[in-house]
Length: 283
Image (cartoon, rainbow, N blue to C red; front, side, top):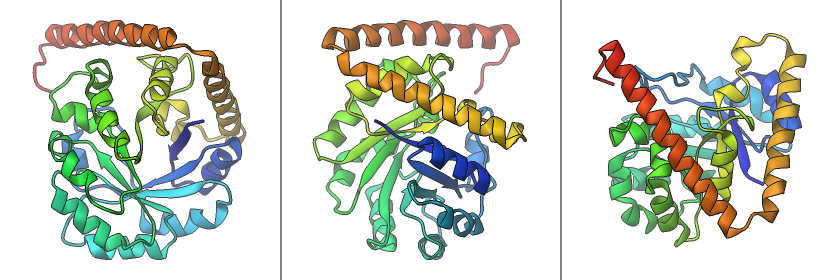
């Protein structure tokens, strides 16, 4: 089964997610330049704090706590010290573009937590071979939201359809490092159906994914019983679909690829036509 991550700083929601089988609770401290990068995107802009780590860590006895810090900046060392002190199991570095940044990050963590790199820039893709030569990297997540912007694409899953994700996964797999990509919604949901994406995870040997905001937008639901129901049913549906893929043949996976390419093409055409209709030509 995929290791599924869910972004929340709410202790009650974290406990519900863990009970439902979410592998990792995700605290997101990244703020530097994120709002500017994703100004026109319907993406999560978190307001998480260091103190959220200490509040949630003691509640976790099955799930790991993963913390995304800021990109390398003048206070990176201090930030990582606080994240380690408060109990992060895995620390994620976003928006790296050079091998030197990754080296600095590894040095700051110094083996006190697992290291996850978030590959989400074209520059990171270009220097990937050099990065993979560095010791101490536990896993790499391919962040399709920023990566598709970096490549000036219209839709994040274009990178899944055009072979970019497969190429990156192949290079990482050669080094024996765990990897994952993108986000997934409940089966039957998502602009690109979640089933298509999950099947690609399996075809490409991916180990992890982030549960999308649409899986359960806890900030819009005040009833914790309803949130628990959404997690329980959503996780059960995902695991049932994963179990069903045990019978998939190479032809099944190849057919799924075709369906992804067709769906992505249709979605991109709609996005582009909508832009023309509205007179908007800049992302």
